[in-house]
Length: 267
Image (tube, rainbow, N blue to C red; front, side, top):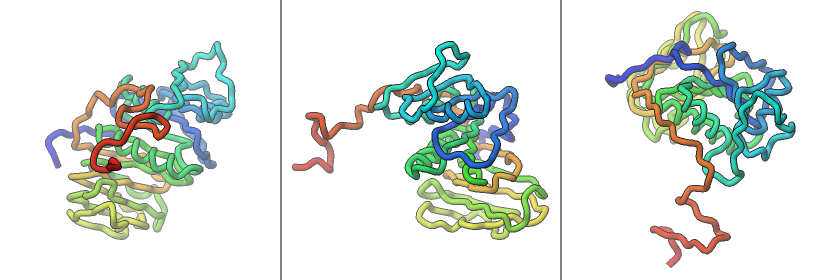
């Protein structure tokens, strides 16, 4: 592993952000620590309100919002335009990161539209590459991404044969090692065209270690597992970027008078 190491056992001094999205919700009741910063990303506000929670911030373009935002609310309102590069969830992460948050839990970010679910995994991958930790709560499953890191679970908390899947997110993941699961590997290379890590299994009373040095792994594990300890070997970068409120100059509209440039331009 590299020289620059930072540790997240969900114990780093930065506060944790709990972000609610407009996706599908399952029967898991979110646990919100007293010191957590709660953000409603657009339609996630409806679910937060149904739990009797007043979020610290609302961020979104209101396109999936059913409830009206009260004018006298203690919630900070950051309204975004409908046409922009950032999704509402990405904007929420940028906002929380700017306040020093490096640990995120997401609810309502899977199910429904598959493209949104995939985009949210991309957000988790970006957080990981910056030295942060993101946990996406799905249907009895938690999804996280580790980049140049070691992730460990203590033994004895997950029933034997419960599934865990580990996929290469990067085109190539080097020096991948897995210990304590039914199928282990030692210092191998994985790639994102081969689902080698599908359907591994927990063993009874056995600690688990998953490590990668040279790439990012997507890890999907049962929601009853304890929060894993993660040791990052990447710099904890402070500049996650500002919230974008406009469409990138890299994009063009077929309805505009702009023309294609580059190798795929029609001659």
